[in-house]
Image (cartoon, rainbow, N blue to C red; front, side, top):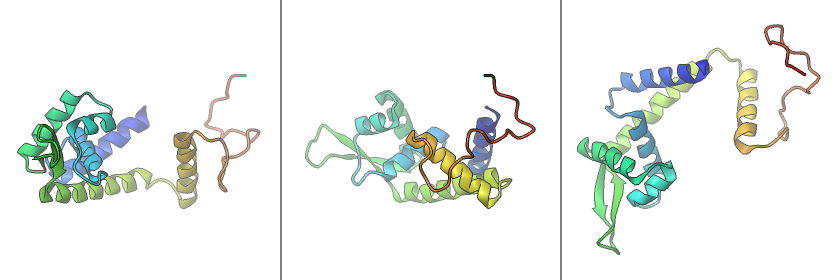
Length: 154
């Protein structure tokens, strides 16, 4: 939990330094929009973000007011509205990416190159749900714990 709070605090600090006027939820929506080949419908965004459609409407309203996205009519169905990034939205995405990159560097600064590699492998294993696998693996189960680690119950 302390690590999660530290990560959020550092990311928030780096975002605020750039004065983009974008909330973390709006940042997530902008990043999601960037992954679509063509402007998505709000329902598509809601499904991808795993939120209710009303939440997307609120996010889009805020981003539209700041000029980062715009609503455009669907060329094949006049009842459908799609959401696209504006040039300002694309510029904000570049700034968001740079802020996140700076935050990651600050978060990982205490780790050596080998530790970063090990962390990357461990996180990949957790995300992929795999055990062992890659060329770089965690120490075998019989490896003694570090002195600062509490003993595990049997």
